[in-house]
Image (tube, rainbow, N blue to C red; front, side, top):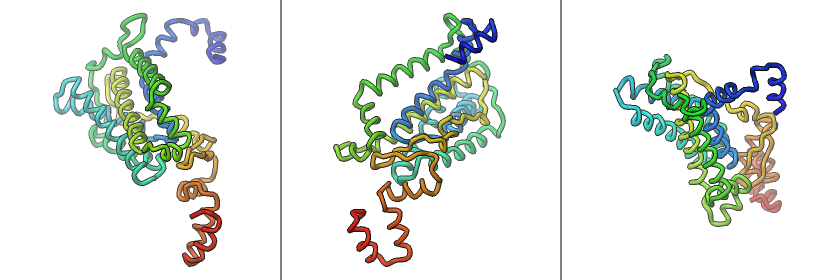
Length: 289
């Protein structure tokens, strides 16, 4: 609000309906990406690959239309399917191997970016006005893409606050161990959230194509929380606690490796030089095993 007031005071042209309608028509892709990232942050994860997954979806759409001669709807479904698959891969590896999503999504970022480059030959693919109807204003200067993005936000809010699924996600992010002890398996829910993030990245790719009339494999989107992860964002651990992102990287890795058990890191390091019997004598009495 302060920035709006400042710019309105500095320029007589800022505070106008045209300004806000122009901004509204340029941010639908960011709006849907923010919805997916919100779900991921709620469960205590993060996804750095959204920009590359968006580029992958856009590249798949361009190949389907320009290379294979597909119509708009099948090409759009292909792009969203590729993005959802990338998100599912990120979630599945994170859950199955218990690797921090920060690391997994960084790997998927490179894979998706490379696939996008291979599809388009590292060049921007000009699709034309096949998706222009999404960005063309229809009423009061507002485009259908903004209306769709607004509906996505409303539905997401309702899911989080009005459904059992939303309560499960909040419970997983707050205390995953308590959710597990309550008889709820959190793994499929976490995978589903990452798949949803991928799907929304595919939708964002369609919005971007409609605005640029092209698929750009070099487009980048860096979530602010990812860029500022060392500034103090909270990553929830399996035991329900959280640690701050400004801790040393090695300390964070040790925390993930030991599951956040107090003193477990000390005992695990001792295992490197002491016999396992020494571990049972020192650690079992402290309640770490």
